[in-house]
Length: 124
Length: 484
Image (cartoon, rainbow over the protein chains, first blue to last red):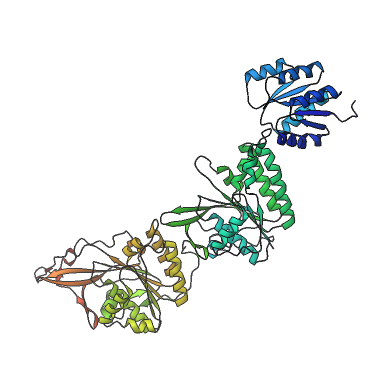
């Protein structure tokens, strides 16, 4: 596995966000794919066998997103939740549904990248 | 060009004088000031001077778009041709894009592109002079104060390492102080705006001396003008130590020969007693020797002064015609003390004047804008006397008689010589008297003499020996028995 480029999936309503994230994550040696809606996301998970990490931004999604979280947990795909604000309830909910961590926007580029690196490394 | 330690001219003559030649190259200087004080204009001078010297000059505009900067500069008469621009001002797209991402802080996203643009431009232009307006914009590209400081420092370092001398401006307010910036630059230039006018002061200048204090600054249609505060020690001229005569034998007797060249004399007295006339008398005599003089009149009009002198047999018209006398009428509130000092300095140089008269000190004090004109008068007087000029200060006292007081504004310490004129009453008639109170370089007659101003000129009598109490204003005749 280690010789294959790790794959990171981004779920984000905002295209510009995806673009920026790709720009900073790809150079670290990852393959990145971004999606903006849940249906696409669901189909993608079902079709793709190997996903190393998922970055989910809660912004703009409703409760149905938790179902997708459960789905990821069942498939043993680690995921990080990104939240527009510091919110205890959301934080609890995220951990309950299997999130590895709960991040609050705006993210600091360096911190995000090193967190991703950390995850992928320990995962492998 | 920039290297080799030769200072870079600021493009403003007076400012170079304050900076003792200009900016030390490859350093970064902070120009601080509130909006509208003229920071950008100083920067434009710096850049256009660069273009003139064939030094690459770069304007990094972070506030206004290039087009606006250029049109503003042209409005002030600057030729922006030859200046390179790097436009980092926010464009209209910024507004539309603002909502478009929130994953990272704009500070992180924007900075990268900003930095890249700057590096690219610097590498391409290789500027000797850089003007960055305003650097405070960087604050919004940093996540915190520490980051900001680090970024600015490394940015300035980058520019100076590439050979540039950098001027950058900051906008500050109490809520957003710029103390941090003051620590990281090599020099600080403070520009202030007062109701009386603008002033400029250097408060830090690494690697060079500078002229301390605040200097007058004026924005004219021809750009910024800076009038450095006159300092007496700038240069000294060798001159002959000699006394100059007043041309009236009795006054010379009072003064034991006259007043010395290169001294300051206060002629003090109440209104109408003849102070100006006595002063002009010295100039008349100087004109006879072929020495030019200048009178700065603050109260009286030029015409009235000329007519008055002509009517008492002082031929000012022909003195003016031969260039041996200049009468300069100073309009109230037109100049700051620094500007006035520069004006005097220039005219004295141009005309090679030997006697300068300021008529009067209270007029000077009232007419010049700004703070503390008296200390400027001190500096100006000292400067002139060291240049060998004889300075006459006319000082009006309000009391007509009695209560002997030399000056109203506490300037008697300025004078080497003090001549005073007073009224006294005798047999219901008003008389005038002249005496000497102080003379630093020689002895003087301690008596008082009567002085009259007639159509034939000044007439001074013998010492008033049999009258006492003249200075009280109500003298009495001394009887023989009363005498010692």
